[in-house]
Amino acid sequence: MNLIISETIRVLPTLLTDSPSLTRILRGRRLVVRMLNEYSGSSNAVVREEVLAWDILNAIIDGDRE
Image (cartoon, rainbow, N blue to C red):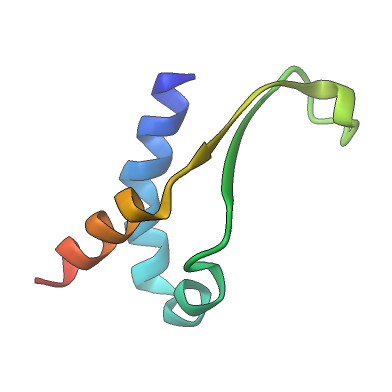
């Protein structure tokens, strides 16, 4: 799960830089990273989930602008 979270944090700033309107929509919301057993769409497929704190993400996003 740590690898999935690390990749999310690594890739998210690039995604948000490419879509400024998405940044405005997502900032401050709960960002949940989930590990799934399968992609069936069933809630039973969730193996594990972590909520990422926006203070960490804000630091990464804002750091990219400087």
